[in-house]
Image (cartoon, rainbow, N blue to C red; front, top):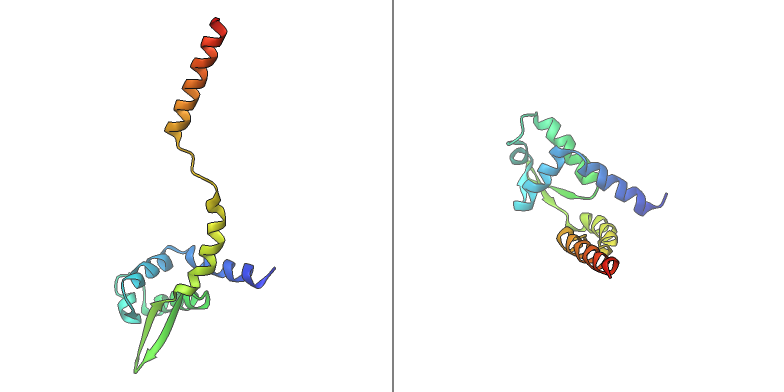
Length: 117
């Protein structure tokens, strides 16, 4: 397994948890102190800190000590690898079911007209 694969595994594993995804959403707004990140959750500060460690280990956030307060912020570079990997699947156009239904109806009508003649 390559280093890239291991890093992608860490990213997707970190994002698999709904609490960590919610933390990421909070940090999209602005840098936050750990205590501010923990405030909306019904879990201990220690539990939120563990989630932050997972996100930091995956390279999704950075933590910085400023005086006695630890601040967290999104690391945009962390999501870049996952984003590049996922963009590889963007080559497939989504199927427009309305267009597909019109195509089928037109094809069936043409086939029925051909069969009548």
